[in-house]
Length: 420
Image (cartoon, rainbow, N blue to C red; front, top):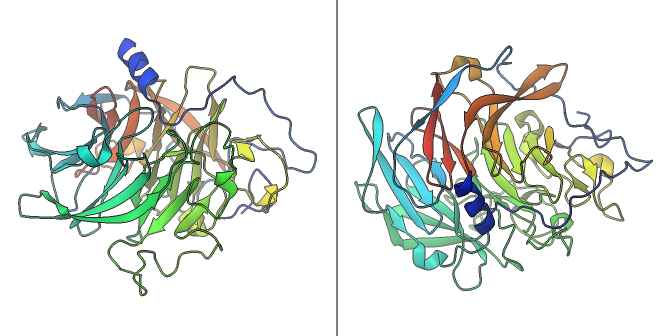
């Protein structure tokens, strides 16, 4: 498959206050001027060919939508998921609590006691720290939490097992799956997703500061600036190291599935196609969405280009082990000119309540409340459309037990996207 960087494609007031306290890995400094394309590089584009595994092609005007607020009283909710065969929602609060909202009538009721309390392990929520992402094992017996630990702020992914029929988790059962030293307080990543292969995918930023000063995203010797593929349940792990035996051998740090990300803020799989989607936060000017199709092994061993590129623009050209022609370009980019500051990657809609939305990738931005849809537009291109609903301080999307899409705002919002 060809790609835009070359011949080979490998595979309100409340918002302002929150934005000052925490942004999902925004850049710093002055906005960069558009970089010129190097003479030996194919000029980048904002689109790439559509996935051959896409099952539908939404067309026409987007459907009229509304947000159905669940009315839950939460303190900085940051991520949402559900257990298999459950009617409840699991919601992570940035301070370290995992809460359960049980189905009740046409809505949800938040249980008083948390399913798991990691507040002591998490500690500080300064800068971009805290409990950042959660996921559930395919059998529903384990919950995974990605957070920055309290002593030094290092990134950690832990596994916790169910302790009883009530669905609570046993804190004593904690197993550390990943622990990565963080040199700075920002760009911690924290997104978790279960792949169609049953493996756990974990995204981590480049280690922070600005401009990736140590070049970690392009350094295979570190897990920073990477998406890792883990095997917590031992489904494909003969040697017991917690990593799938069929991971790519890239000759570097363990567990690396793909490299070259600045701060992957939300990764997800389209459960109808197996495609991997990544929202990667830009440095100064460009936000990007990446698509790694199942037909090309979901990004196995891919390099998404940071910090050689910011989105579709050359950023720091120079010597490196990977030719620009082998860097995977984003499927969509947008500038910060209209108020955005930090992309929030989302999910592909595969529910039944809004059939016109089927196959559309939903995403947004922490600073721009508009929720957008990315959909195939014909002739191998994608288009972004405004879906007419808004969420302040948008930090996550999740799939509920009804296969409908839920949105999470750091200001306390948890809502379901519904037809108007």
